[in-house]
Image (cartoon, rainbow over all chains, first blue to last red; front, side, top):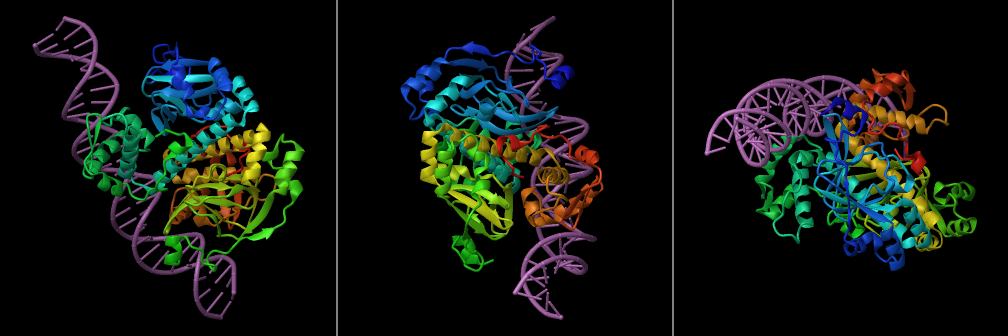
Length: 259
Length: 259
DNA sequence: CGCATAATTGATTCAGCTCAAACCGAGTGG
DNA sequence: CCACTCGGTTTGAGCTGAATCAATTATGCG
């Protein structure tokens, strides 16, 4: 890594590819839960004030301390929210399709506390901030939907805190894999979609520890061959995860699909 | 602790004193940032649909998995959000005067992921949920204010995650004490307002470790004599805290006063 | 005062980190 | 087709921060 670009956060065209503008599938976008219950005229207006960007794997959408100037929604791909400090990095949340990306930063102009980085090829929709605020003036439904999504992200983050101090590394890993499987339930064989080092950061451990813990969870009914996750004994794996901070918790009801 | 009451979450009158109904200082309440920019007629309507409860130190406001049936605001005192599992407990956030208490639980009827417990004598204001929803229909200002407060709580929780995996126990302790001092800036000598074991849980360490770490931070310009916090060398203490997840970050701009 | 709860101290253990080396698979170029 | 690199992953050895367990000592508090 280039010392200068790391320290100054400047853009090195080679290390930091610019996103490309893309066209979006409007019908799919319209189905995003953030529009639930919103009148179609407002929805259309927001859609017409939106643009799509595609980021390549590894590129940053925003750096910590930076601001987003529109409401960002993950349309495809996985986005890692993490604090990056030189070599060391510390993941917070993995946003997935349909999740809002740092809504507070766009709505309140707050500098982001974390960096957001695409881990896979990622399509992001950006809604014009002024247009979103205007829509919130007209209808409380949008504000309510955003509020709901933020509630869900808060819950996910609280889970993360609890996991970090109540569970072992192996338990966090197993629990993560199980949730991953559930979120991919409709798409055939479950796959680990990201590099292991990013998974390690997300789970608050080093890559070396992750590697060792994979062996431990394998002894408890949860294999990983290549990128394919194989559940040998779901009940055992669930038992191994230890006390779930809040059982039966699934944040999808709050329009959150993050990991 | 009584086995039955712990497992079933039933109310043992001795261990779990009921809160008492109290009258509130309406003028002070009106100054709560959640009402910022809200018309006085709506504000008055909400105030007239509110009630006050006073909890004694140690009593629970809600247990994990439970629901709150109105928008709760901390009016006086400190409320610990924590996951309690038998003996072991794990703190997440310490709410302070003016903070919203688990707003998502009231607004969306979601079961709470954590327990909320008064650590000092605490006064809570409860606004009728239906009335709050009605107010949100009429004016987007209230929704916006709630959104802002939730953003701030999310940021605090993210900080917590980062602290847990980027800082040592001693650094977390020092950083917490410094923030505590700043929040008490206007009230004379800074005081540790809660029992050390609760502080330990909030910081993700055991009471024994906290005790030892207090000696370490004392060697870095931050003493604690009795409950009084004495800053001997602020610059040194700040340097000792290590990398701040996001420097200059103060969530008070987002109407959050939590610790 | 006397009891219960909280805080400290000490000794020991252990989960996970660090550092270093080996390994592996995918490109790349001869 | 093979050698070579190069990033990512795995494995191993040792270290360390913090937990645990156990024993005191302080601090309320009725």
